[in-house]
Length: 336
Image 1: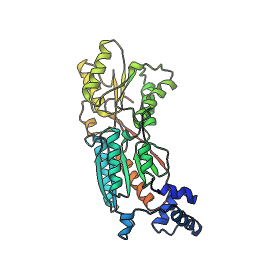
Image 2: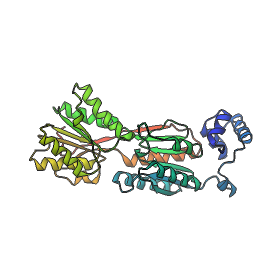
Image 3: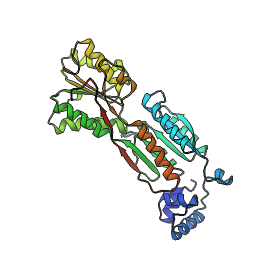
Image 4: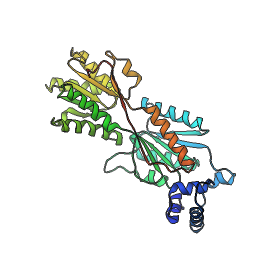
């Protein structure tokens, strides 16, 4: 296996950022550290980014972007903001839509590495799952060659920088607010067991536990990401006499299913049933009544991801975890 920037940092006893500063000729490195890095590079026979440096350049000025599904409204918005910010910083981008198959994800990551991009941004939590068969090793391996920015996922490894929405507290807080408002039978509908998906689910579960409400597995349901699946599940609960007085969802589409359910059964919203969506998408303003939704600050999240990458490429020391708060946008499906 070829020597990586991680190997150089380990051999020299410095951070990856320090090695990056030496490679890019930055002045903010002590002479002692510079000598250690250069010595390690020589001993390990390390040659950085041969193609770019062979042209006398320090950078290809291109960033790779990967996402699992560009038709997803949230991911599409994130990609738009990321590409916009990259252009402001003088960088082009290469976009790969991978789907959810791990083999395809690895294939496209290898493709971006072969294009000698300066860094890679993984958009969305579908790249990290907390499951036994989850394999993040290909991401960790790639980070030995260039910086990886992970948007709404977390991997604790050198040269991987994670920018996250605080999904746990967002769902915890709205669930707690519903309970304070007198709701005791709260349904949670979600679409994923990704890193972000599980944080949201844990927020719902902990809010119930901390308010002495028993967890009922039938009140938390993993749905397909479509309106009809949410509607069908709530209808089944109704016909099985499983009463509920609030619905919290991990995506606005599922909340639309809850609103359609209320219309079908002549249930008044928010008097009899309170409903909360997630992502504050345009659809939240197209329902009747208009939907209260959690805004995950996708624009700020995307801007922070690019800002983090720019700082890393400049050789600055950067925290590997940056958490951004969500905010609740109150409309007409809640009383609080």
